[in-house]
Image 1 (tube, rainbow, N blue to C red):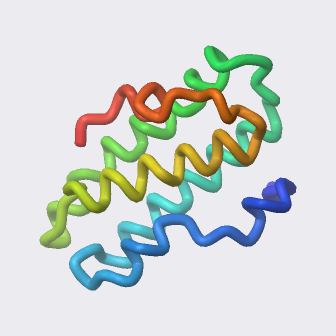
Image 2 (spheres, rainbow, N blue to C red; image 1 turned 30 degrees about the vertical axis):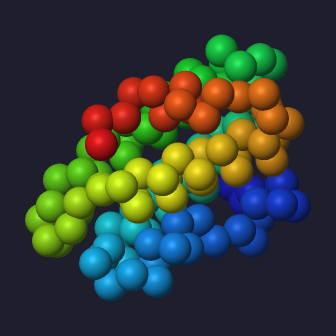
Length: 113
């Protein structure tokens, strides 16, 4: 399913990380896929409140947890810059779908990175 939100349809997630060779593109592509899938899920399920949104972002956060090993295998890791960029992506998604009052920390509360 294609993302229909005009703000996100052509948005480049994790752009800052793609500019840094420390972060392998093939792993970033997987992270971008997680974020795009989150957008698609939000559009399909239309969460009615923050609790419903947080349930969706929890699943996406756990998918990023699973990517940590892939980063490490490629000689990288989800460190400070990556954490901030990933967190920012979750915030951009939340606000684009009308959840400007979402807590940025709660969006990624299940992170292990």
